[in-house]
Length: 244
Ligand SMILES: Nc1ncnc2c1ncn2[C@@H]1O[C@H](COP(=O)(O)OP(=O)(O)OP(=O)(O)O)[C@@H](O)[C@H]1O
Image (cartoon, rainbow, N blue to C red; front, side, top):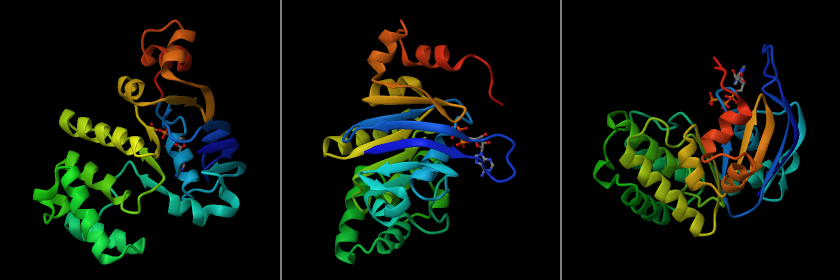
């Protein structure tokens, strides 16, 4: 589903590159984890994949389409859940979702039904007509995910979807991701919660300083590094020094 080759990116006025020849690939129909310490380049990579940021060089293929020539096709096939909440705070969940669904050209009957189903699935039906600014952190995150699902993306990309939410919301979000995968979709997600990634992901790529450190199945990485957890593998390979 994803092939990244020799990706370089240095932001304007930045002293250091954010990506320094990153190469990695993930096969189709898996839950993949993109992991790394703060500043490793995860969000930059996601932003390039979805066309928000332009790489300086290198190539990216998403679901068989080359980013350089097929961005419009790619946009139709992927859903991106950003780290920050991308909803209008003064609008209700239904108003936000209707607006986003219309941007995707979804017919109004189908859209209403999808919104109803997803609000129910994400436990938000009672707050459907409440302004987003009155939502709790967990509710905002759940609504943020629905916004990226309305067009039924083949590949769902989520940037720290479970950051800062309570255990109940986290549990719900992870169960949804597993269900979405079972329905035949692919998922790429980033997280700093390595126990979560170990349980959820079929494959993980650990990146640091804008380069791939290692990629593989969590269980294989643990065996290869004589570790009993993915967190041990992560610390072993990326070190203990603070990054800020
Ligand atoms: N718009 C920008 N302008 C300049 N530098 C940036 C910009 N966005 C990110 N960076 C820098 O690029 C590097 C990689 O950042 P990025 O956000 O991709 O890392 P990350 O792995 O997602 O980190 P985190 O886990 O903290 O979210 C960091 O050094 C960051 O400061």
